[in-house]
Amino acid sequence: MHAAERIGAIPVRPPPVSSSASSTKWVVVGVDMVMAASGIVISHGLADAGPHGVVASAVLLVSWALWLTRARLYSIRFITRRSEEIRRVIDAGIRAVGTMALVGFLFRWDVSRIWVLLAITASTAALLLERELLRRVFNGRRRNGSMRRPILIIGDNDEGSDLALMFATDPNLGYQVCGMIATTNQPDRTELVTDVFTTLEQTGATGAVIAATALPSDHMNRLVRDLLDAGIHVELSSSLADIEPHRLTVRPLGRYPVVYVEAITRRGWRAGAKRGFDIAVALIGLVLASPMLVLIALAIRLDSPGRVLFAQERVGRNGVLFKVLKFRTMVADAEQQKVTLLDANEGAGPLFKLKHDPRVTRVGHTLRTLSLDEIPQLWNVVRGEMSLVGPRPALPSETKAWDDDLFGRLRVRPGITGMWQVSGRSGTTFEEYTRLDLFYVDNWSLVVDLSILVRTIPAVLKSDGAY
Image (cartoon, rainbow, N blue to C red):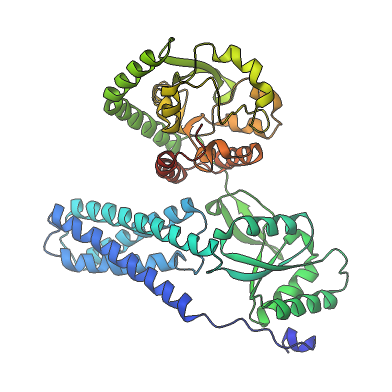
């Protein structure tokens, strides 16, 4: 007997998948295949694929579609974290190449390795660009109230409240909270189930997100079983926050499914790859930007007296102090004037920020708006004091207000850009700045770095929160 029948309520049934949702899914599948095929076609124009190039292309395209589906990249809500979507697209591409190579080995195909490399590179780039554009379109629709599943939050404890706040403030997650079920004063399982199903019927919610810490295990098992019997979409929080999904693996341990958390490796080949990438990009950037650096230096000298470069002591990895380099954007005695401006500070916590700082020069305002004042930090990257991506380099005075958790950001090199900078820049609150920096430290990977670098470009062009 179904749960809804046991409690004497009208059976709750989620609506069938709407034609619009189904068509959206197939549109994405089709666009994915068009973009992947475009990359393959481009690769044929750049290199000779060999006598079996056409059939190899077909196998590559089909296997890629299968691996993208296997990676659950066609869920109606898609992947909410950009870095996770990038990771899955790249992983699906590697598996597709492996599948094509296996089929080619069995049938003795003659295919150019150079063509394979070009095909996978061009197709992956096309897919990632297309999915970024789709993400922006879908997120816009979610902010307007569509493409969001109506849900109940089950649990009124701190975790349940945090979940409700998260969904309310981030419509891009794809959920619309229709109500919250109180569990604090629900000692009886039957009363809890009755309350849940009554609220589901009243609100029309088709899903439930359960706060894991809000219910005892016997209540949890009964409720999950009854909800699934009634066809309700169920998700259970893990009580873990700010951890990338790729670090989590569910495995059985006795009666309980437990979540294994993979440790972050900051040494070995990953650290070497990050350092090599940093040096290569920094050196290339300095060479390409050298003519502009000369022009900026001349503009600074003509605009106001003082040095071209501003060197300021910051806290680096493991607490080692270093001099961060920037183009000077303020008057020469800016540090002395800061004392008189402390009461006007608009920054949160220990951060000092002024949207209309009178110490900023005319040229300095332009440099800050375009983030050109930070180009000299590429030399800090070459010297090993900074990384392209990492937490913001803090002033020694700021660390006096840090708690023990925030000192964890010193486990990695500070960066020219980072999650804090691309998530609002100067407009980000101190609490959010803290959370984003620690999230990066705890979840660092090359894919995360790549995602942040890509997001930095539009953030700089839009001058989001830069002052």
